[in-house]
Length: 235
Length: 235
DNA sequence: CGAACCTTTGACACAAATCAAGTCACGTGG
DNA sequence: CCACGTGACTTGATTTGTGTCAAAGGTTCG
Image 1 (tube, helix red, strand yellow):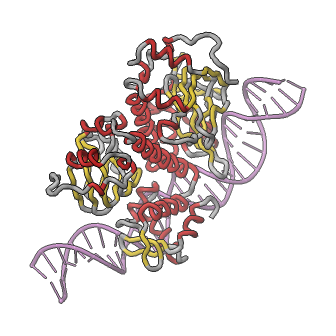
Image 2 (cartoon, protein in one colour; image 1 turned 135 degrees about the vertical axis):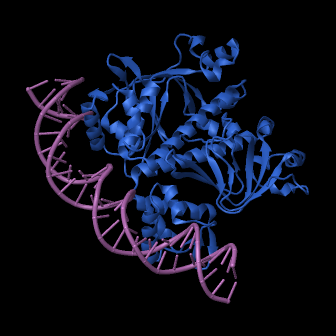
């Protein structure tokens, strides 16, 4: 499952990514040589909530879903992480256990390093600045979700969740923009704090109105503008 | 309103606080000499969401409420900050504008420094580590709130919010533990995403059951254990 | 071909928002 | 010091958005 790099990883993997972009070629080389690369399939778990945070990760391709499971077994999706970002960076926040579970929303490709190397990374020029900017963005996102949950009705929350996914992972297809990974009604309900039944009803209604179009596990937004409008207060 | 320190601030103000505890006496002296102290009264705003983040703060006494206001004018309370913590640390997260509004829940006393000094603080031994541990804790807290909002009913959310306030700011009084600052039903509703009416009904019911006791703007929890039980799933 | 799963739809129940008065405490100013 | 006004709180009646319960249809894959 985890394997050392068989052939050297190419430096161009990291150069375009913000936390690494200011580094010297030699520094990037050193970082890559210490990385372990890993491929996980759709739905597989990368690490579990509460497990010792022994590694941190960089997502090269795919999407990671960050979820938490309650005492009664309900799943709540806290966040989606797009390709190009660090995740599992518990060490950066003074935690020695992962605060949530990370699973692959679609097949994913990632690099990882042992947590004990974090301080060395942190010492690199511009690395911390960029990292904490990412943390700041996530904090902002998650805050927006609280405001949303506190003030909006289910329909608006689902509309906004879909709109966010379109922006983060959407890819143009004929007739609209498709979410970039397999997505069930249940998944959407776990992102918005509702039930798969309600999501199903909403998507059915929206499909009738020509706003979305969906097949099993695939959702395409055909009228993004109207979707955004649905997300506003007052329908 | 903002005023320079008239008499030198005492070093013992900072020594016990985690981000400063590892610093030399001389370093603390230098930090204090650059600080501006400020007292704000109950309800006053320290800084507004969206304003340029030109200063960062340390709360010496009182409680700060972090709120966001929606386009339609609703208020949502994201977080309460207890005495002894840094706040408004937008510079630490790469932001040059405050992402939320901070207001004093009770009369509050704070120090502040210009944002441009942040890098110098960050270079001090152990300072960043402790700061980001705080950020991590807040991220965790806010995450818990999302899980709560997604899975719990109103009664349980309000019970948990009260329980949290008891832990953070409660002080023993005869007959129970009182929340450490003035708190209205409206305030509680803004923390839990419900209406003041529902909160009022809940508190009335709990008062009848001997779990809380309240007078105008003051809430005392008389049976903390049963309150915690109310916060669990299944009442 | 069957099993596992995702999805849809209807009927019903209920928690909580909304609508609507009205009482009660407190601080202010005359 | 009392009257007045404002803001906090309470409580009932009504409405409604969503969850829950229930059943069945559709897809995919082994």
